[in-house]
Image (cartoon, rainbow, N blue to C red; front, side, top):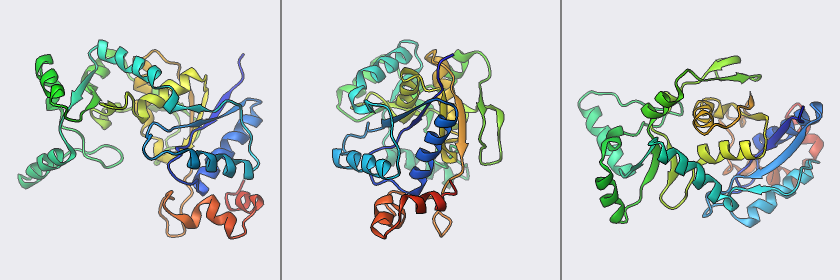
Length: 291
């Protein structure tokens, strides 16, 4: 049997906070308890916001916490070709389409619907679903839109994707979802509508790159915050469509700020850097996180 493989995968677009510390430490602890491997990955497909300075800050924060990991660290920005291959496979099977509506145009359609008293469906995060009309554009119409230079996103045709799987999807959960969901959990990717899989200038998205990376790195156990619980439905769908292995999942509690809100990289009062400057020690962090 191969060793279990765990990973912590932050985005270097801001400083780590207590929530990141909890996830990193929990991954490392669970890997050690399972005599497994612990990987660090930089999810830096947003090359505009992710910087080498912030990446180095992540290394500094994690070393300060006493963590170590296998080298080399995988950077998503160095693997666009692999994501493009996965996107091409989905495109060849007719499961993605270029979507051209701008955010303003989508909001206009939503406002029109609301004015008529028609509710607009939203995804599990509360964001409005994309109107699927552009699924029906002909190839010639798509090419004409592309030729204008207008920005577009590649979206998954959810109806075709679900039909291609041929059977219901599930995942094995050792943590718990927002409503206490655990054990064998039914995936509901349709709740997300036609999710973005890639963009005109970036041949991937969070959803696509994370499943490709986890498969290529042999990740067997995905331990992450409960805010990503529902996104697992999309990931299980992509894993099935791309013939990727199914990991085990563990969604953990979120670390909340004193006001009860989810921590954010913009909140310096809970960043590891800010706490360190206030005199906090790694032991103080472990105590705060009850680790």
